[in-house]
Amino acid sequence: MPEPKRPTVDEVLAGALHTIENQLLPNLEDTWARAAASQLMGTLEYARAIIASDEHVDVQVEEVEAVVANLVRDHPGLEAVLEGSAGETRGFTAMEQASRLLSHAVGNESAEAEAIRAELRPVIVQQAADNLAETSTMLMRFGGTPRRVER
Image (tube, rainbow, N blue to C red; front, side, top):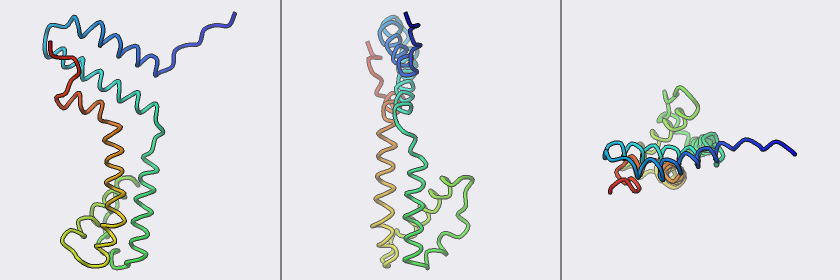
């Protein structure tokens, strides 16, 4: 008979969540301890989401880099806006460049500003929405919407 396999990381996290919710929370009297347990559950749920999804930071960085490169190619005057925008990592550099371009477009009615709003802004908004969706289980627990904490 083959040896049983060890549990997956997701199974271990699911077990921890179950134990906290069904054994610890019902027996904790202190409100702060209950809130901490709920926040721990949010963190574990976020860990499960991270494990279940593909790491997409590189894809997001590449997407921003491509949009920025296209904007600079089509509007060479934007190179001046990006001067000195190097960060510690590719991701920081891409976000710094996006930030500078978006700031440049505020209140600016030029063709390059319109291109920034049309091409870069939707990418950044979608990435922010995706990141929020991924972290929402944890954020809701830390932001004052703990599940089953109040008695």
